[in-house]
Amino acid sequence: MLKRMRWRFVWAAMAAVFIVMLVLVATINLINYSIVTARQDQILAMILKLEKMPGMPVNGVPFSGHGWLDPPSPEFQYSTRFFVVHCDRNGNVLNIRMDFIASVSEEEASEHAEDVLSRNSSSGYYGDYRYVVEYGDTDISIAFLNSANELQLIRYVLLTSSLVALVTLLLIFGLIILLSRRAVLPYVRNLEMQRRFISDAGHEIKTPLTSISTSADVLALEYEGNEWVKNIQKQSARLTKLVNNLVTLSSLDEATPFPTKTRFSLSDAAWEISESFSFLAKASGKDYTQRIEDFLEITGDKNAIQQMISILLDNALRYSNAGGQIQLDVYQKKKHVWIEVFNTCEPISQEDIAHLFDRFYRPDKSRSKNTGGTGIGLSIAKAAADGHGGKITVKCPSKNSVKFIVTLSKAT
Image 1 (cartoon, one colour):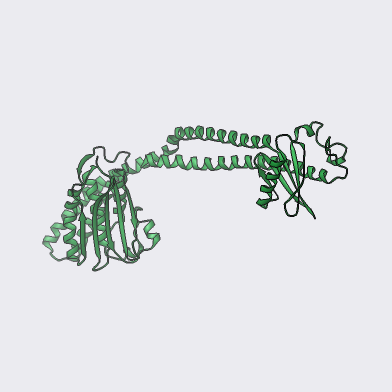
Image 2 (cartoon, one colour):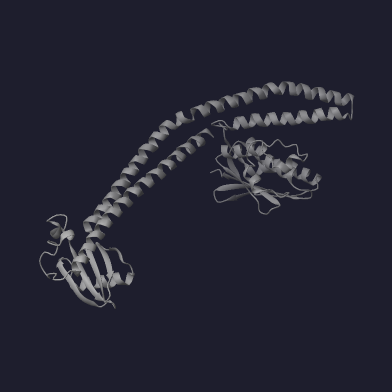
């Protein structure tokens, strides 16, 4: 359990760091993309304005001597590659300005213009070009700006920031693993003290409990039928069971609850436990059925597995409705063995379902019944399943039924 808790802490911390890094990388790249794109759009807007100016030369330098439209540097006209396609309202090409680009032919420029117009978009990227579409009264102007360097810059920033984030995540992951032991150390100490207290207190309580139970048995022989004596015996047995369950649960919380695991027949173990419950179910007027597949073997602690099955069957018998159904299924599915305990019951809420494996938890309705449950049995069953590397879950096939499902690895 402590190992799982430590890794939960590690993954929770890494999830938080990952989200922060993801937001940071996304923000950096979005800002960079926005700045680069805005700059390209400004240049395209300036090109389209220059195209509309009267006396615009076919060849030469179109950027100089136009006031606020002047470029930011004298080299601007030589470093900016663009072409402009003018079309009528039907998309037919009227003329093409190719003075400032050499890598595109007029045929290619026409094809690019047709593709852009088919997109029904006023701006965007087309290959290595940034384009802007401007609709006039009688014509359409499409300006293409070569943005290969800018797109390469965007990709470079994205790649660099992603690599930096990945390396940072790996470094943080290593640091969290190193520091996680220290982070959970206070909890480990408290849990160890708690286990020691439960174990010591359990053994100390057993002695007076045994004396009380023995004295009650003697009084029962002398005062046969006395209600007070019967109550003492009943409560003593209940307290003894609670103490034993607490000690068992405390031992299952250890790092290695089952230091010695052996290979055994799950089929035989299930038959041994279920036989007595079949008689109890019939005596209670309940319908009990079982299907236990033969020759199923697992590796683990046989007593713990039998206790887990016993708890699930006892829970089904205890909380099933009058004349209800109880069913035990033990079978193999792929590389796992499945243990399923089904029973009909009174309607149970989803809130209760979510807390059934919590220690000392019982649905409110069950507290008014004379079940004698302690609310710790299912916690022991879950700890036993976890200790064997398995999983236990609970489902409600209907509003008046419940099914506990245990999956364990099959012995190889």
